[in-house]
Length: 159
Image (cartoon, rainbow, N blue to C red; front, side, top):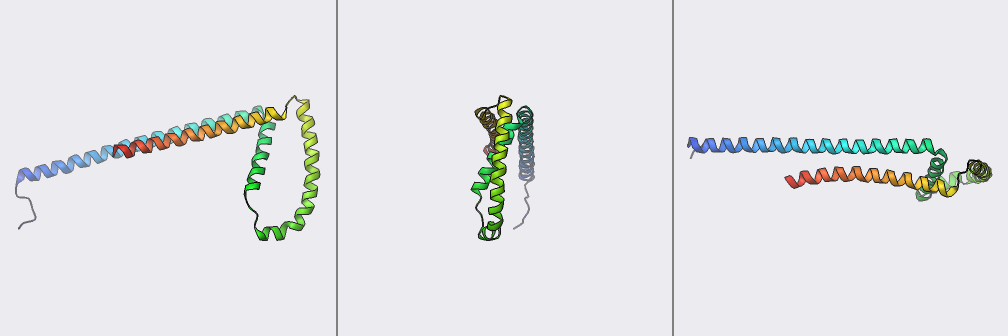
């Protein structure tokens, strides 16, 4: 038996089938590439928009942002566990630092309260602005993620 196809028509059909498959694969690749590029661009635009909005919020209310940053730092510090070695090494230092920090925090709190009150800013207004900023950042990140997932899902469905 021979390993070649002796019928010229069959050979042409096989070649046409290969060419068609190659064209479809190239088209699918290009379409997927375009959708991925669009998703990346949309995500980049959303991130830039969130960054601009965050910058505007920081400029318009730096005290609120500071309070939010301190709250976020405290939350992260509370969530991350301390190791045993860290406890042993830092316990003596921590006591002295803790006393100094307590006094510094009390002084900063009083000074900050006085400054905020003098400017007519309240704690509830600052909290509201921080919540709004964080909410907007979450919405922007969610929107960017959804756009990427949608583009990927569309590509998978078309296969």
